[in-house]
Length: 245
Image 1: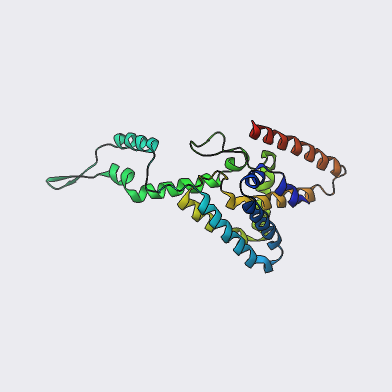
Image 2 (image 1 turned 180 degrees about the horizontal axis):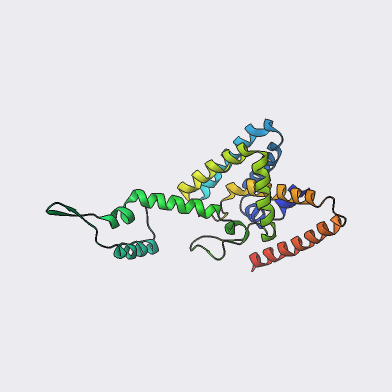
């Protein structure tokens, strides 16, 4: 019940449904397989197949920029940074050798590629991207929207903690290839980095179930649950109204 609540009450899945129903179905199936695999290793093979298909969707629908290319703003920043480097010289006996430190650190393609890969990884790891529409670090040229209601962020973090303790191997092999892909292609996709949808949705569901277990023996447990559901509905309506306007 909690799992279905998380899957169906987020703006992300409905936005995907409006654009690509096949992708939405695949995401829901993958999320179900991920959730079921926590206690049943027999579905691992199906989960791998589902993730492989999602990888294809993510790659095909993402606008990929060359890692070695610089935008106009990056070019201006690079020029400014190069000007800030002091002249570097090395005295070798009677000869003075000039060391092009600024070129090595700012203009080498290898370092530019590594810098872009690092930026791509940290962009998709930022919780703001999923719960606050990337505010206050909105990116120019990207479609930003609040994918999950922000009230679910604490449950997501708690769910990650529980998931780490329950199944570290699953938590390892799922995000690592995903992060590798995003480091290479970036996340400029109108539907966002949806490869993370299953793990985020499942982590939220696990966190909610864990929180409900913690208050299970409280005297007024029902009031806590009803209060949370009321606040959750209000937040979800707010998120949807912002998205519409």
